[in-house]
Image 1 (cartoon, rainbow, N blue to C red):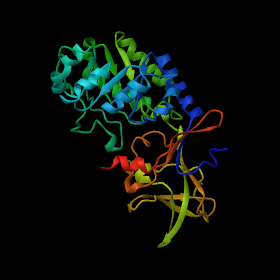
Image 2: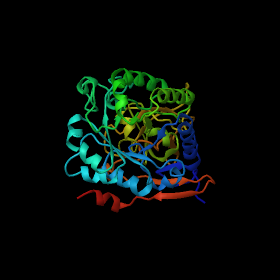
Image 3: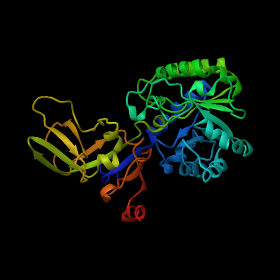
Image 4: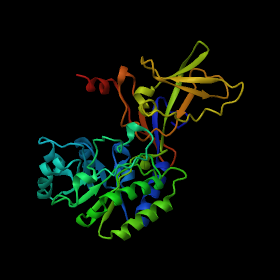
Length: 377
């Protein structure tokens, strides 16, 4: 019998019970606050887990035609679309599958807004409150010169006729108190426009399923906003919150090398290919088998099995020496991970499996040479 302890590596292992725990919390926040909370595919698109998600949430947000088609065919609820720029070639296909569509600029709305209205799709405008609460610049849409959203002085006192919603997105794995700061900036700059619209989308980055997140404060914040603007539908579209801490990447040590006093354990996976945010952000993931640093305990870099020199991270401490065949579990690898992987070097892509609530393992996908070949020309 395959179990999480003996499943062949490398493998992304998603846990049904953890996923349901997050979905139950999200559903409670939605119910208690009166806000519509929808799923953002940019953080996770493992559609074979969607039958579980669909029991709680069927509405979604899509930022590409591929995400839109995936949502239309696998979740089937309202489809909220945002793309930095639509084209004459894509707008018709976006409108065909959408219930709501957000335009990133006044020019985009002037170009395509009437098409949306004629198609029965509710058009909105992304605005930029210019309130920065994110430390990592690569994830910060409120940086000076940002290409995202229209600033208040460009809009003026009235919205263009036909705009039915406003959309802001300024968070990333943030707290409810970060949202409070952004919401204050949003109301200060755009509050006079709210009588002209039907809905407000507060974007993503609401990490309500993280331990210590103050969900009661979030509910109060959303209730208070809705009491000030009772005609507005309030929408949140968190990405990470849906699949936060719901899956791991399980790997095995294949070799240990030492140079200039630095020991590196090479694993059968890759940071660059299979955990790209670790290098991009960067952040150091938790390895379940590691321990707190202490005198006398061995430390290791962990190296990916690719030819990229920078495909490693440092340092982790272990209770004893690492040997080939030992398993290392990289925690929380089910959001912004599987959606961003690559097949650089032709490395074997980790399988994807689901650990059901009863402990049984169900493979969702096993990757083969044909998957690599079909991505090449």
